[in-house]
Length: 213
Ligand code: B1M
Image (cartoon, rainbow, N blue to C red; front, top):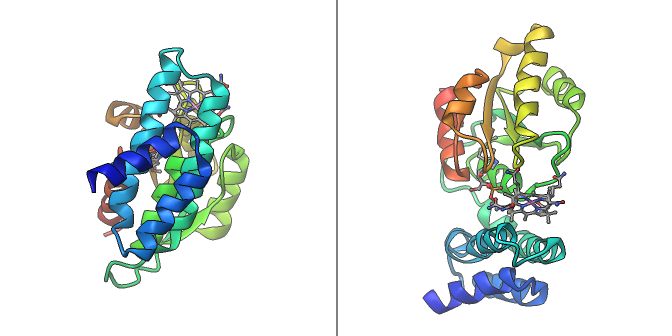
């Protein structure tokens, strides 16, 4: 199994979309564990690509190819990952978005997938979503939770701005705000008065459950 996870990691690292799809399909046909394939295989590839990018060994196109390979594998595994793990349908709504100015959507998509798998009604607004659009969605959809992802130190600031806008609109206490993304941490969440922070998709579901219990 370790070899297969290595192959998955390498397919992303090398931006080999065809191989990533093939390996993801293999998980389905051989009834493997899609979650393990993601966590132990494909996601390790993107982490390593990010490290190489930071070290100047990878350039933007390398990162783009790696991300495309990961997204293709994610698409193949999506329905398997979304399978309800026996939990009853919660019928709670969550509006999810990557904040404006930020096009990183992989982590946010995985959070959405896990929320769906656990019975949440997910309204995924996408990436680089204007603050105003998020406020409008909160007003129209009236979700229990709004989840804001940010991957850049520059765009984290938008999480704070959105909370301020919710306050200004008088709707801050109608919704729980959870924040996440690589540069975000608990200190930041406390500082901007978010209701919660989580560093991965599984704990994001637990957090949502706790906040809406
Ligand atoms: Co970008 N990028 N990137 N990038 N990229 C980072 C974030 C960076 C850390 C890379 C690096 O330098 N090491 C760096 C940011 C530096 C900083 O701000 N401190 C960076 C940069 C600089 C940039 C550009 C500015 C590069 C450039 O143009 N010169 C540019 C930004 C463009 C923009 O947004 N305006 C850019 C572009 C890109 C690509 C397009 C090539 C691609 C994105 C493709 C896509 O998403 N469609 C990309 C990628 C792939 C990365 C890295 C390598 C991987 C991100 C990722 O998908 N990780 C990233 C390096 C890294 O993070 N180590 C990097 C996998 C994903 C599953 O993890 O998103 O962390 P993550 O999500 C996790 C948790 O964080 C958490 O759960 C998820 C699942 O476990 N989580 C939440 C996430 N959101 C959550 C929300 C929650 C709860 C939990 O509640 C709501």
